[in-house]
Image 1: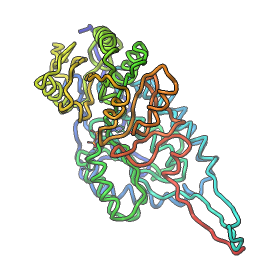
Image 2 (image 1 turned 90 degrees about the horizontal axis):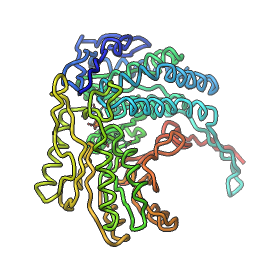
Image 3 (image 1 turned 30 degrees about the vertical axis):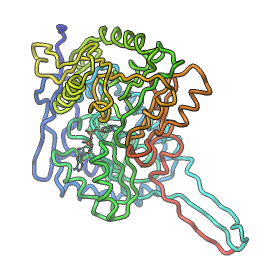
Length: 493
Ligand code: NAD
């Protein structure tokens, strides 16, 4: 423990707690609220309005009313509003970082990195808003002229998770607004404050009333009820595979456009000629970020037998240096997990692996940090070796600071093992042989592969998964297409 005293009042000052509807913050139609809990202490921080079905319908009415004008707003003007949003996020970066660390628990450097990443989507899509293209051709038969224009798909419902309270929203809001679509967003009830604050910045940036609505709620079904309203034309979801698939099935009933960013089970493969130092650094970059609560966090460490000892030694040494504490404390390296459920799930996965024969190299349990933090959702940074392939931790997304190592002796077999999952979001491969590394990257069944490094998210690059990890891409040159629909205008030849 440090003698750090958190200043909650200052962090929460000027943060809206109502619903953003019709360009202003207001209470829920039935006055209901829910508590936002501090994961470092298990104590309530503040009450936030809880949207009702009626509020959700109001947001869609507003979006439909605002659609025509927003769609007709010149791309350059939309672009300028987005760029202004980017600047406002930069202006309030410290505030947003503190807020994230408070409601989500993670250490400040992680929150600062997310604010930088999340804000960049507004700059990137400000640049893309003015580059929406079309096509004009003579048909092969020569009998008609084929003109194709890209138009905004229509009102969008975005539902986002708690693990990146800003960026998971901006990755959807920025391209949707750039394309000319109004957006209704439901942040996770665990972390509504960051999105409410972003809503305030978007209004300041000049996003018109009704073009952005923010609907936190303690009853998610109140907002997802909109999926059966056929005025809604796009559903974009980030969260667990189970919930995403269930909501996508509902969206299919009105044939709306759907994109899904779902769960992962990323393999981290150190091949026989992989560089262990690079791999250890990548664990810091990819696994410790957010305390491991990242959809692309390495989940299965598949390490060549000859590299295991050095890799484990490097990671254990790195983990021993970490200071656990409250996220807003500048001395903290690793904050609590975001939810009690998450803490218990990580503990159960570790206990199951140990029961089946895994060896604990460091950590392995819930620590007691004492004082106000004794009820916080902390988990010790943990390294397990000899993890049997039938352990739950190999199949399930851990979402915690746990490195579970299995070994192999044949590089080809390692890639097969890496692909043995229903998920396909991210993968990591380490090899100093370029041909081998590229071959592995091409064979790995995932939407994204990092070679010899631990980071791969970039607003200018397509983010998304294959298999049961998702549908569609966010960011990059194609991210805006998720909010556009091609229209053919066929002209006589
Ligand atoms: P979750 O699926 O429980 O919740 C995601 C969102 O859906 C939240 O806003 C939640 O309130 C809402 N929701 C849950 N049940 C609902 C229902 N019945 N009706 C309407 N809305 C509902 O996921 P989570 O626990 O918030 O987030 C963690 C998951 O998100 C992990 O599986 C992680 O891999 C995934 N994730 C994926 C990506 C990606 O880009 N692929 C990014 C971040 C997180």
